[in-house]
Structure formats: C-alpha cells, structure tokens
Amino acid sequence: MSGYLDIRNVSKAFNVSGRELQVLRNVNLSVDKGEIYGIIGFSGAGKSTLARCINRLETPDAGEILVDGVDVVKLKGKELRQERRKVGMIFQNFNLFEAMTVEKNIAYPLEIEGVKKAEIKKRVQETAELVGLADKLKAYPGGLSGGQKQRVGIARTLIGQPDVLLSDEATSALDPQTTLNILDLLKDINERLGITILMITHELDAIRYSCDKMAVLENGQITESGAVADIFRNPQSKTGELFAKVSKEFRRAENFTDGEGI
Amino acid sequence: MSLLDTPLWEVIKASFSAKVWSGLIGAIGDTLYMTIVSSLIMLVFGLVGGIVLTIMCPDGLFPARGAYTVLGGLINILRSLPQMVMIIIMIPVARAIFGKSYGTNACIIAIAASCIPMYARIVESSLLEIGKGKIEAARSLGSTNFQIITRILLPETLPSLLRGFTVAVIGVISMTALAGMFGAGGIGDIAVRFGYQRFQHEVLFACIYILVLLVQGTQWAGSFISNRILKKRCLLATADGGIKAHRVNRNKNTQQNIENKREEKTIVVKKEAIL
Ligand SMILES: Nc1ncnc2c1ncn2[C@@H]1O[C@H](COP(=O)(O)OP(=O)(O)OP(=O)(O)O)[C@@H](O)[C@H]1O
Ligand SMILES: [Mg+2]
Image (tube, rainbow over all chains, first blue to last red; front, side, top):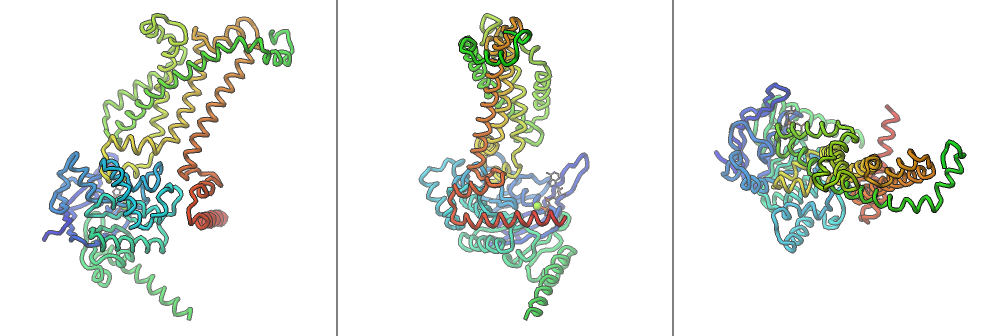
C-alpha cells in the first residue's frame, strides 16, 4: 500500500553526551493525498523529530520518506531546498522573523526564490486574505496575538504552494477559542487547496475535530493507527488509552456540570 | 597651572578657558579620526570574524570543529595581549605599511588589531542569541545558508549587534587615549604631555571632559538607535513600550490587545502574589 506521504522503516537516534538515544524506531506511516492525518503522543515520544525528518531538518539514520514518490532522504543541495518548499512546516512557537513586517514574513519564501516584485505583492495579498490577515500586513509580529502570529506562520508556508503541511503542535500555545479558529483555518486550507496535512499534537480533541485518521506514537514507535473514531472508542495502546480516557473524563465532567447548572 | 599650587576650582575655571580649548581642537580632530577609522576597520573585520565563528561552531550552519578551534584560539591569544603590548608589537607592522612607526595612521593599525578580536567575540555572542527556531523556519522554507546569514541572522540580531558595537567603539576611544602616549597624537597625547609631564592640570581636565562626552555620546547614540529598532519591531520590554508601539501601528484591535495584555499582566501579578 502506498499513500502520498509514505514513511517506511524510519529510525533515528541522537548522541546525547556519548550515549545513544533512540528517538524513532522503525516508524511506518502512510498518508493519502488531501488527508488531514493526526499524530498523537506524549512529550518526548519523538513527534517533532519525525516531522523534522520529513522536512529533512534532520536526516533519518535508516528508512525512506517518500513524498509523492520521491525519497526525500536521498535529496541534497538545490533539490532538497525545493523539496522543503513542497513540505511546509508550522511551529508551536511560530518562529516568525521579528525583523520583518507581516508582509515581508509572508513574502520571504518568494523573495529568496527571486520571484518578481509585482507577482510577490499579488500573491502575498491573496495569501493574507486567505488566512484573514489582510489588515495586518504592515504590522510587526511582535505586536500580534498568538493566533495572528500562527496565521502569519501558516501564510508564510502556504505562499510557496506546498503539497504537504506539517503542523507541529501549531495550536499548543493558543487559547481554546483561538485553537478552534486555527483548526478551522487548517480545515479550510485543506478543503480549498487540497493540501495534505500531518497534524502533530498532544490534544486528542484537536485530532478528533480535524482528522479522519490518526496514529499513536509511543516512545518512538507507532503503536496503533487507523480511524480516529475507532481509536477513541477502542484504543489498543497504552498511550491511546490514556488520551482517550482523559478526553472522556473531561467530557463527562462537562456534561455533569451542565446538568447541575440547569 | 598645577593642582599642587592652585586650588581645585581655579583649575576647573581655567579648564574652560578659550586658550586651553584652542590648543585642543587639532587633538580632538585626531582622536575623532582615529576613532572613526579604527571603528570602521574593526566593524568590517570583527563582523566577518564573528560571523565565521558563529557558523563554524559545532551546531552552526557550517560546522567545522578544527577551524573553529584554531580561530577561537587565535582570538583568545590576541585578546590576552595587553593593549600596550599590542601597540609595541604593531610598530614593525606600521613601519612596513606606512614607512613610519608613529603618528595617527600607525596607531590605527594597533588599535584595530587589539579591538577586532574583542569585537569578533561580541558579535559572536550577539549572533548566538538568535532563537534556533527562526533558523530552522528559514531552512524549512528553502533558504540557502547564505540567505539565512544575510536575511535572518544579521537583521534579527541587529539591535544586539548595535549595542555590542557601541561597547566596542567605547573600547576604541579609550585605546586612542592610550595610543596617544606612543605618538599617535589626539587627546591622549595632550593629556600625557600637558597633564602629566608639564603639570598643566587645566588641560588634563579639558581632556577628561572631551573623553567623557565622547563616550557618553557614543553610548547614547547606540542605545537610542537600538531601542528605536526594538520599538519599531514591538519588542521593547519596558512597561509602556509595547503599548506605544501598538499605537504607532494603529491596529484595529489595538485597544483590545492592550487590555488583553493588561489582564495577562494582572493575572501574572496575582499568581505571584499567591505564590
Ligand atoms: N537534536 C537533538 N539532540 C539530542 N536529543 C534530541 C534532539 N532532538 C530531540 N532529542 C530528544 O529526542 C526525544 C524526542 O524529542 P521530540 O522533540 O521529537 O519529542 P516530542 O514528541 O516532539 O515532544 P514534545 O511533545 O515535548 O514536543 C527527546 O527525548 C529529546 O530530548
Ligand atoms: Mg515536539
């Protein structure tokens, strides 16, 4: 079986003060085109490392990562840089360029590519409108709220017209309402532009809201994967069970207080 | 006029006399010339040195452990030489370049040689301040290493680089005064010749005023520009800096943002009070 994004037997270890730390063990994952696929796991499970391998900010020790049939592990130099643009990434702490206005942040990927000024202006305007930032173009990131910052992050990635979007805890630093807005935006982007999204998070509710399929990453291994509803109802792994339990507990507490209130 | 036989206030009064200052104008020009030229040389070489150090360090953009160790060691050796020793060592170099081993231009070589390694380290520490995430974001957007340096690393750390340059220029100013003793001319030369050798303390006082003004002016200008940039980027961490910047940006939600921030602040304060 092969999907649009195919991760095959990927392993990665870090050398931490002389000791080998195995962060990813034989990870296999297949994501279809146009899907929003969730990955959940506890802190330190290796979620970010997996995302960074897909974007080749990190090189796996073993395995293949196929994006639309191209093994990104083998790419170098210019080809690698072009591939990185096809696999956009948004971050928990946004990582915006604070020396640039919102406009310049969004334009950055096109500017380093040498796209013509007029074309850049047009596409920045379009992208800013898409993410709801058209009135903030002249502002600096330092003066924006968290949700607005993440919108800039998303726009900056989208302008390069990526095929895959890696969202590494993109909503973890945001309040619930803003989280919902950003998740809606990602859904909207997925529907309108057909971009495949890999959504990494430790919020099961975010995955339930956005994804059809998901995988559980536990200690560097995928312990289960499949339909979100199935995993939520009948988790097979320890991590899956814990997440489902916590989510259900919250829900029950919520219903209880609702009942009391009336 | 010497402090040995004249009261302090007489000396101070004399230090403001036109006679004293007319004799200083040339020296002020020499000091400014030495400071500016040395600072520019230091800026170019120190910046390059600092950038090279930063990108060659083990988790930098072009990791090169060997070269990093060699360059770092060289800088440390140069930095451990007292400035006076550096001036003496540079005498033959100055003679080779200018044909004479004294005078303003000769001393500029010694000043630059002494200040470049220091400034390279200051640049390095400024550049290392950048959040790793920004570099990563730039790389994930398809930047080359050169683009990361010129478009991200330097602009993002500009306020810190400016503050570092201010510190280094002040170092240059104090070294021009020292170099004066070795025939560089300038304020330092006058201070030694009149203040020390001839006991004309009113001249010494005037020299001190000038040096203090130079250093103060440099510091003020450096802080001012650096803060201006921070304010423009809404990054100034003063009590009202953020609010002012918001006003400047004239955001639609400005008032809302400020109120949110205020609320956050009061919450933090409350939390602290509880703890
Ligand atoms: N560059 C690195 N060098 C050494 N160890 C690393 C490096 N990057 C990650 N690690 C280690 O790998 C493990 C997994 O890290 P990773 O960031 O992938 O976890 P995560 O699942 O994203 O956690 P979180 O939810 O906290 O973001 C951690 O133990 C971390 O310390
Ligand atoms: Mg992470």
